[in-house]
Length: 144
Image 1 (tube, rainbow, N blue to C red):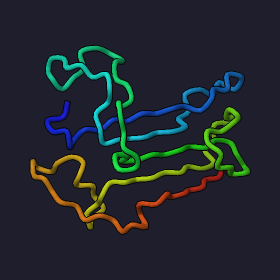
Image 2 (cartoon, rainbow, N blue to C red):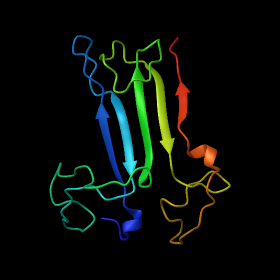
Image 3 (spheres, rainbow, N blue to C red):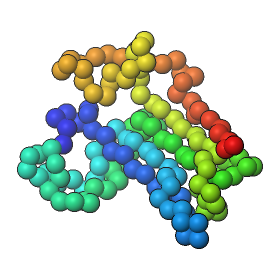
Image 4 (cartoon, rainbow, N blue to C red):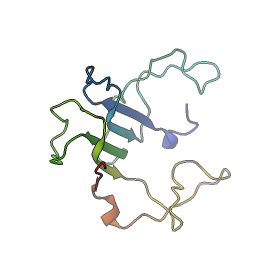
């Protein structure tokens, strides 16, 4: 458990439909990190660990987009580059054809994210990136 609620982060991943014929399972389809604590945390000993295994859940409440640190969608085996999400068909070869993501953290002039881990115990005030960096970024990849 973080010492400060300002350090809370909860990450969740959902997966693409499995293609058991081709033994393709566990391919991430969506990953999101939020700046709130995960649900289902019961303090263990030491207090930074949960009391049990597999007890964490999605946060009870997330204010979107303010509390979303990052969100990424992954698309597989789609030569048409359709942006319909989630994909209607299971992957056939497991090749990533496109990712779409959004990062909402602030960065300093050297490209570091001083708002996440505190450096040498000091709190820092990052310089936010220009607003253009906060918009969706589309990256298309094709396999050879």
